[in-house]
Amino acid sequence: MTTHHALFGPMLRQHRVARRLSQEVMAQHAEVSTRHLSCLETGRASPSREMVLVLGSALDLPLRDRNTLLAAAGYAPVYSASPLDGAALKPVRRAIDHLLAAHEPFGAVVVDRDWNVLRMNAGAQRLLAWALEGLSPPPEALRNLVAATLLPGALRERIVNFAEVAATIADRAQRSLAVEADPARRAMFLEWIARAADGTRPGAAPSSGPFVPLHLRRGTGELRLFTTLTTLGTPIDVTAQEVHIESYFPADDATDQRLRALARQGSPEGTSVSARGLPSVK
Image (tube, rainbow, N blue to C red; front, side):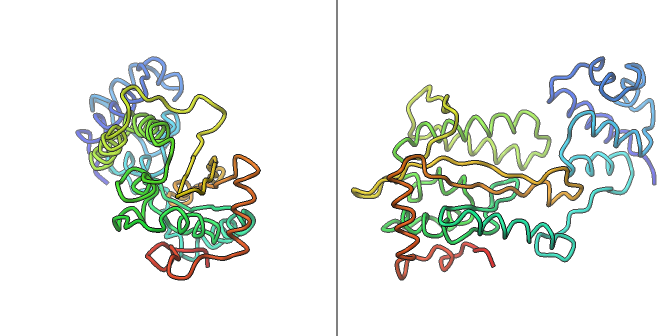
């Protein structure tokens, strides 16, 4: 395949600068000379397929971006991007199903790299049904966790510490924005940052504690939660690397008891979140 120097060199430099690496440091990570790295960035040298992979690893790029870097150099992608429901990722689905089921009666949601909801367990359905009862959230809020948190008419109306949660989302988006080369995703992160700032107090800071609390209130009922993220170790598939599980844990005994009571009661008829468009675990 023909090497596209005009695409590869600037893209390599953009990734390096985004990660605030000098050519000297980057060259050390990739175990190449600074001069050769400079020639690669300016197009005076042509990278081999192996060199592109070495540079992607040195930059700690996500697998999707490593494939893009390969394509820019004129090579075919190395890492597959199998659909989550495809045969290749059946072991991954099995592991996900196990984790979702094991987390009952508490909520757990499977999301992709853009926080789009892929599936959830019954605990998450009950939690969202409880929090969204009486509201009319926009459709996008039922498909994306960030939208569900930031958009008016959705969870935002129930989050007591919204300024703190929004600041945490904005901080996460800002850090992702700093190393993101895709214009569409950069625009998405900028939108998240703007929405997070809307309606919050100036200078709101992310949580400084051991976890980000999520304090929900509906009428006289309250839930205090914290979340953890679970990712797959050493994946070699783009989809497998990007999927992760957000798990919700009770932050106090009262919330633990309320969530267990919701599990015994089941979701109130007519308020099932999965019936309103969100996927549940099979």
